[in-house]
Length: 59
Image (cartoon, rainbow, N blue to C red):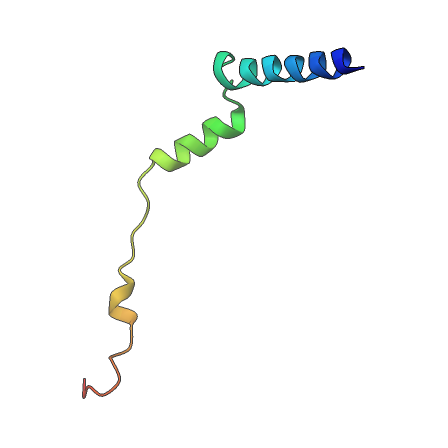
């Protein structure tokens, strides 16, 4: 029984190492669309002009 447990732990460590370090992730269609959205310029609105004046000022 200890040999079975030890072999399962070793197999698990080998599989984890393979997926973490050796296999490169493939880019899916969703990931490509998200990366394209990130690289596109975003519309910027200055929200600072809509902030009410500080309490105690007469502006």
